[in-house]
Amino acid sequence: MNSELLQKIKPPASAWIPGPRTLLRLTGGDRIRFLNGQVTQDLKKLPAGQAVRAAIISSKGRLEADTRIGATADALWLETDFILREAIRSRLEKFIVADDVTPEDFSTSYRLAHFPGLSQPPPGSPNDGLVFQCSRFREPGLDLWIPSSSDWQPDSTSTEQWEPLRIARGLPLWNIDVGPDTLPPEAGFESDAISSTKGCYIGQEVISRLRSVGHVNRHLCVLGTSDTSSKGMGECQTQEGVAVGKISSLALVGNVPGSVALAMIKREQAQPGNSVLAEGSVWTILRHA
Image: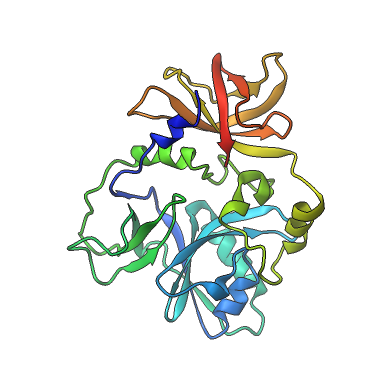
């Protein structure tokens, strides 16, 4: 089992993103400055029509949300897991003092479809939706937020086809693969969600300290096995029986024999090429998230 398995996992043409999703609209003259101080990504460089991945973290550097933020001419749109709907809105409102910024909840107003490789909406799609270029699966694609009142449907595939892709790309789910005890560098956020050049934001000192003089003690890893019968959602161990982590997400690849999984693995064992045991199956660490 090696990284060739990951290369064989291709995105479907289109699909609904499993939802619903939290979707907040921020308007007002201070929206960019305000939200830029709340997230790890540099929103001052974000042009209209594009969306970027960003993390919201606590003052102690712990993860509070994995987000995508899109820009339109008059607003910023923040999307995250639906379970965080109230928590993230409350977090933002807590820090609004004299800022000219208004957050509004549009979570039930739109549905999200994603189209890998597209730069324009597909023919026949609603012209009153929100459109963002977004590397949602760490490759170019298009997010189309379709009004809930619209009957339009993309040529959608089942959401199950997206799960192997999500896992193979090392993208975690909240309260499954990551949670409030996670440091963003543990889960690979530095590759596409943390700016190394922007100014101050909440939790920046912790991230900067980890980057310059420290290291994390575990890594979210993408694992692979040729055992298609594996139900290895349990504890990961070395050949000697030492516990080194736990599988949190698992999916059959489908077009080739094999399965992929995500697991948070202790740093000493989390090297690509190493093997771990889980529920009787041998898994190879393919890469960090």
